[in-house]
Amino acid sequence: MSEPALNEDILRAAAEVLAENGWQELTLERVAHTAGLSRVTLYRRGVTKENLVAALADRAAHRWQAAMWPALTGPGSGAERLCAALHACCAALELHLPLVAALGSSPQPGVGPGTHPGLEDLTPIGGQMSAATTEVYVAPFERLLRDGDADTTLAEQPDPAAAAVLLFSIVPGTYLRLRTVHGWEPDRATALLKDLVLRGLLPRNGR
Image (tube, rainbow, N blue to C red; front, side, top):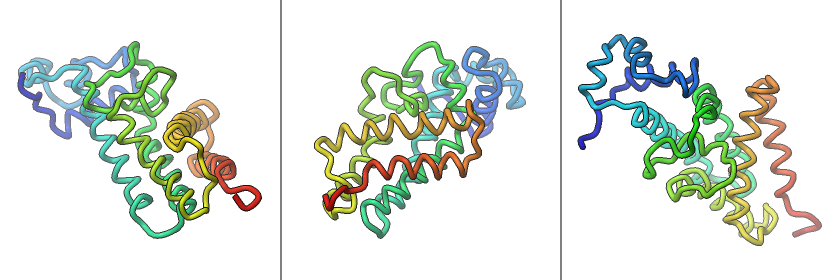
């Protein structure tokens, strides 16, 4: 089957409907109306609810990678670049906050195809992460933890891969809760979360 014809207007409409109404109310009729199209037009283009969410997740993954890239490649110690990565993580999540919150209402995990990391993976709740999710969202944290260990600016981690999964599980999920449940402002949530996480990763007693 050929790929559906999804343009920016359709994706923007899908994100708007999902953010405002949640997963249960994400229908092609609503998306078509918001995009100024007919339901038949979407049907003829091969658009489905699932590939709309997969496309939104794919777009968010690319934006996440772009946000994390400066921390991975820029100057500074491992600790400094991890600090920058945590800030970028919160900023990227803020950009998709209504969408990620709405995906929490999805009745099943892994909404998108296995080749796309789902936005719902930003707040993992048990189970195994896909290889795509690990590569996009977790690997940058592992890289920075290893760099910080090498230059002694971060505490040595017995299992950097597991520590990276823990970071990915804690930071986005906590940020999402602080913003949507507790109503914290973005700057406050970012600063306090970043400070708390970094304190637990800094060397103690000279390593």
